[in-house]
Amino acid sequence: MRRTLYTADHEAFRDLARQFIEKEVVPHYPDWERAGRMPREIFERMGELGMLGTAIPEEYGGGGVRDYRFNAVLQEEAYRALVTLSTVRTQIDVILPYFLEYANEEQRQRWFPGLANGTLLTAVAMTEPGTGSDLAGVCTTAVRDGEDYIINGAKTFITGGLLADLVIVVARTDTDPDNRRAGLSLIVVESGRPGFTKGRVLDKLGCKVQDTVELAFDNVRVPQSNRLGEEGEAFGYLGHNLAQERITVAVGSVAQARSAIIATSEYVKERKAFGQPVASYQNTKFELAAMSAEVEAAQTMIDRAVLDLVEGELSGPDAARTKLFCTEVQARVVDRCLQLFGGYGYMLEYPIARLYADARVARIYAGTSEVMKTIVAKDLGLR
Image (spheres, rainbow, N blue to C red):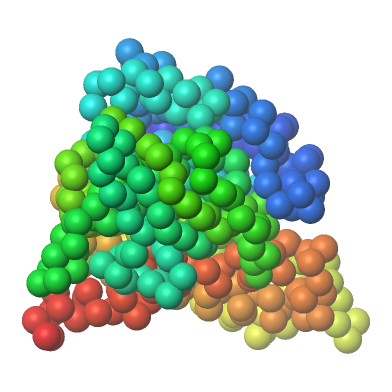
């Protein structure tokens, strides 16, 4: 169906992204999967081309255009080529907004140029062993000591933590027994600080090029000048960016589902069963037709949500509806596409197997499908 979301500037950016991905990502992707990460020089190359800093003000080396649609284009082009861009999505869609919203002028001068040119990689450390989606249950502490904080605690499932130069740590700077959400702060911890340990790289089902690690903090001393925003206000800050984070997942889900249909359509034309191309059977045609209709519906929904996000009008419940619907569509589509591949679909040499494995986490991170349903139910007045 015809899309009206993008302007000529976005399409020019798309051409740049497509050429970069085809030339500098696709040929090396299998090696990156085996290594479990994308090389730092690729981030730097993307920075040189202006792909990482479109939202960063021009005075710090960025593009000066805060428009999420450029981020969406980058995702769409990566999934069109059946690859991912490692932790780029996390850096520019999830983490950068915290720097843009809450960094003071001194912090902007210190960090923004590196964020724009790809020489500073980031992670955000929220989840702890045993807390899951319950951010109010964070136990990592940051205790004042003169002009510093002393941080102690552990984090897990930290995307991009292995290569990160800057980690935004959600830590408890105060405890209010009557309000579990109060007293949380965002503190930036630089890699290499004494007591800051990057633990084992977790072996995941999918998303193999996106490293995920455990982090430990043992009396890590960090200056108070590394705090983002006001002390004790982190819970509100984290909620401020949740809508974009959830839309980011939905954008990727729809793009991956579309790629699954394209890959499957090509495969069934070539693969024969009982002397005929698999594409010639009515079931194949009906399955792909039904999936195509679902993806087009999801695309229309996500495009509306992205535009609302850009215009500052996207509500939390609508972001939840969009993530819920798009990720569930993705799950159904990749499962049905793998079925059409038959036994070969279970082999990792075929892209549908990777799409299947990668899709599963979309219904978990940035809020599970169950959390999304809870948010929507409350919006319906069901308390």
